[in-house]
Length: 514
Image 1 (cartoon, rainbow, N blue to C red):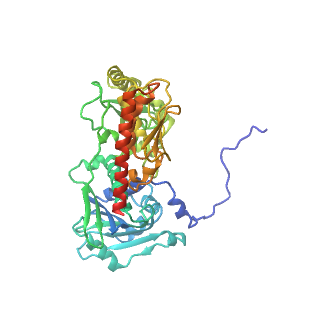
Image 2 (cartoon, one colour):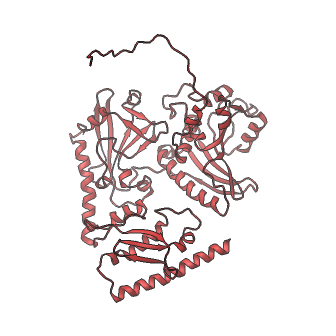
């Protein structure tokens, strides 16, 4: 084996290799979640100086037809719109801009829609004509062919949103053939809208909370029936500050630590400890206790990572109250100490930052490691107080929503070393709503009643969380005893009778609605 190694690779020229048109297909397969994709479009509105953004779901009866994001920003002329619709289009970003890569509009949109239309108007005169472009996946794959929107339609779309929110200028992004819109009726559209709009409002409220807290910026989510002009829903997104607790969980916090990163200098860490057992949306908006602990990175006031320790340490339940806000310095992002994902839903921190955390201190010389210890102790102390006042229980297991399991574990001390209680649906005698299998620690629910209980929603391992939670609270003590006494057997029979009657009533309601 030779020991020689040439670090510089010699070349003999270059060759122009443009991307294949299938690159657009790859661009649309980056795993954009629906909420993250919409947030990326709103980022563009913020960069354009918008004061009002409307996210508009359009339906025709029980069928969703389009989704539009409308803003009153500065708009784009023909040349600017061409750049915006070019993959990786080069433009000068404002130093405080949220955009970075020149791909967000295209990849976010085509991840979820078969076609994206952009119509925009700049403030010159009220009579100035708007510009419009349209990408369809079919045309994109056929040699990057971007369609020019007919001027009459572009003006018609601008006029439709005149004064709501567009007055002099603004931009409209329209999605058609949205992939996850329901394709059947039967109430699916209403259920989809309720579920999707709730998640979207929480996502936007969290990741854009600093903008929404301002007096001059608003996001509205609305639903309109295009055949009747009826507006079914119209509400403003509320800011969800992940550090907006009513009272601190530890008297010594919040406090600021400084991590000195050699290549970029000091990075400030604003360390917080939430109060135990908080039920606010600000606390619960991010996954489970494992998901929501750790670093909350901001770039230009936009939250780009909500939770996670970035290889500093492993997450654990005892750190569920620990949150650290970090405003990323531009020079740190430029130097790639912090690398943002294209979707702006995570940050890859270099080992240089992780090493700097080990020696980070506050103004009094307190170490960042001490903060982590204090957060751990705050959680454990709250758990200890609970353990002295409430009897320990067998924990819930498979079939229960993770957030339900977490809530039970927060509120009740757990019996150590016990096999968890599972819950599942199976076919059993229709005279019963549930059965108890002590040996396998399982609550068996009658599959006959599942569709009625779910109300037409799609079933899954962790479905019907409210029902399963109530049954756990009723039945966990049964598994904690070796056998059932006469009083307990009577209670079980009572619960069976009432639940069967209720389930049959639900089935009758479904039949009547059909």
